[in-house]
Amino acid sequence: MIEEKGGKRKPVILVTNDDGYKAAGIKALVEMVKPFGRVVVVAPEEAQSGMSHAITIKNPLRLSEKSSEDDVSFYTVNGTPVDCVKLAMSQLFSKRLPDLVVSGINHGSNSSISIIYSGTMAAAVEGCLYGVPSIGFSLLDYSEFPDFSGAIEYGRVIVEKVLTEGLSAGCCLNVNVPVLPLNSIKGIRFARQNRGTWREEFEKRTDPRGEDYYWLTGYFHNDEPNATDTDEYWLKEGYVSIVPIQIDLTNYKELQRLKSWSLEDINLSHAEKNK
Image 1 (cartoon, rainbow, N blue to C red):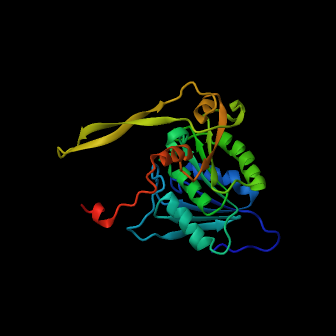
Image 2: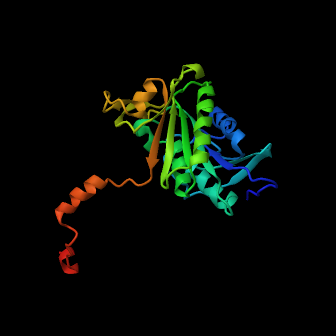
Image 3: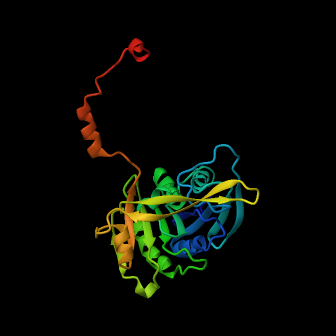
């Protein structure tokens, strides 16, 4: 359990990711948030990219402390990003929730439809479910040694603002940073999520034993390439994009249309249901 230290209480920030505790991105994220308070890292033991909001239900989970010094405590979990947040809230923050949850910095984009597959953003959404302001950070760089300096500097601006202003209930932020040197990033833009899809293709291969298997490939298709108010647009223009994400997935416009079907008053008898 995280104990409060003497003196004025510093903000406590929970850090997690989906690339695993050894990833360079989580080290950059710790560097980003350290100036703002005490940092508690709870990250997966192994990479968990693409796990979305998966939780572990068939295997026991283990929370292992790796180190604790200089206001940074480091733990690992043998599970998913959402497992990390759930275990942290249950075991480390049972008396008092953290002031902020941050997830990332992801190696690669989580703009547009990628958010629904992202373990990075699922961890942020899970923090949001606990009522804690939460942010997911991603850098549009898939290289082995990405430059996180732009994400760190712009991320600090965003973190400071969220700690000061807070976020609405049921909302978290999806922050994506373009692959540009720090001095080439033009600024920050608020945006909506771009409509697009991943067009999956499965490449058929044969293993040394003669058995067929399939390797996922594919590409991103932008459904609205001419839109000028989306995360994809602003990222291409050289800006950091911020999309506010809500937990409520209800399509309220469609809900009103469905009510015109007049099904709500239908109550079939048991006999009729089983004819």
